[in-house]
Image (cartoon, rainbow over all chains, first blue to last red):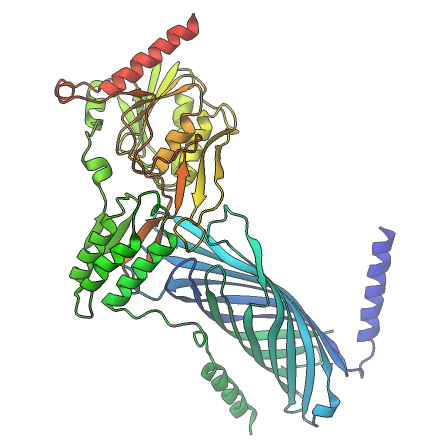
Length: 252
Length: 347
């Protein structure tokens, strides 16, 4: 108990110290975002057709923006409702697509490649995400599909400093190694899922964000994020998602 | 560049780059040939009874594929696909189209009905009857000692099926019960297990299931145990007669499998329909929906009952002359069996 109190005290003192220095640039931010997402999934275990629809993403993130490096932690969740691309002659099929993720990113500044207004960082992301797709069909019946992925991504990050208050950032993440857990060929959860393969998971995750300082304590971000991934086993799954996001950033 | 212009440009770029479906393969073309190919392939990859039923699916492809061309009308395609699926002789295989629903019915059509619900209400539930669970349950008393519950389906919400709790409470002091599932075509195993658990004396194994789990027709998982757990609620452990006929199918057969392992349950009537497939619904590019079996269910003795049905403990049929005389001989056998067990228990 005493140890917890000490830690809390140290955290409090650190925050106070940070806030007590008005001229020092704020390097730590916590942000909360929401918006709209548009999703397209083709999971051959579930259906030979593509399911499409929209939903809402939410994300809580922490970023440390030092002079030489960047650290970031993201906790995200989204839910979208998808329907088959064809109009069905019997019943209505739909897919609830749940995604949850926890990621840590580290980027290091490359001065030799950077200019006055453009800063280039290179780093990696440890990305963990779980996707649960519940397919509903007639008579209130449903089946669960999805995957669990843990990957190490290589990630370039480009910052364009438009003005003192505005910044445009582009980030790309591509997995170099991944651990994927998919349901078995039989699809049904009765058979325990297993780790099927490594290095056969293809994902393209990129984002373009425009950040503008509103005050000393708040920034606002507009973001477009595109995520695509595919995995071939035991049957092919392909998923593409557009995120249109507005994010409020609290500077600590 | 002004800020407003820049923001507009940024938003435009965002919309321009919205590429949700950019890398996702487009759906197959909606042509008669492609719809045929997909249906054939889907069955080839997922259907679970090719080898058990000795069906050469490639041979069937060679027979039917030449009949389909770009000029084939939807109606003609429906007829061709229906004829192709008929070879499977499987009550769990269906094709739903705007031109009708194709379904294999020989598993019950060529057999005696062995059930007339009006006759039971008229001649046996003479002190009246009630319904519950949105008419899933019809129940009443056959004698002062024996209650009667008919379960018409296992499809629907769990809440509807929980209404059996109240019925069992009403019958709690009776000496025995007739559970009639004749003409119950199935639904959800979750619902059938929910009811079976109210009759379970202990956790019992009632069967196995092998899932089709690979592209080869003989790719299956190891048999998975199917068990029934006793309910935490009060359970009916006095003598029970379970009535069956040929139209008892699918999840209703899971119910028979689960109930017949309890020592206080006797199955009386005709064989069940023999639908052991656990089907899944899928779609074609033209929006037609189809259903196919994707597992093999086995009895605790590892016997496959697909197309055969489950044998009752006491085989009884209703003859036409009995029906004409207003007699349900299956129900009467159940009453006699229960009364005999009351007498044996009291001795």
